[in-house]
Length: 157
Image (cartoon, rainbow, N blue to C red; front, top):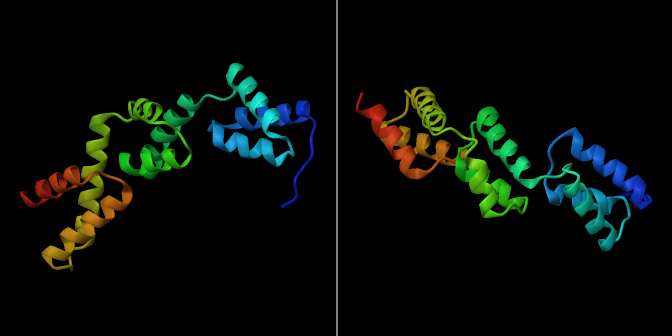
């Protein structure tokens, strides 16, 4: 891949624009800055500057990421946590980000997804229906105990 070679000030301006366009995590910004041909010391200095000037805020990023993935893609906590871990976000920040997800919305979404999947498998045998619904919800990142509870609630109706 072609690497741009920018001065520290040019890289700072581009980094600032990169961060103000949408929330970013430290890892994304670090990769971007290295892509400008900067050395480790310059990258660390620019990262600090972007953090000090509040262009880069990992807590804010994690909160928007968690809230967005839950609302838009209907991901569960496990999948969100996994993705944030991939971006090297620490557990404290992840826990804080989960406060963005309202508990009632979370259970309502799980219930809605469970019903939709369950009803789409009407032709399946009972046990297959249960397994496929469970696997689908696990893939979405929901917790197994909550999935079992949601399926049990459907069956009791």
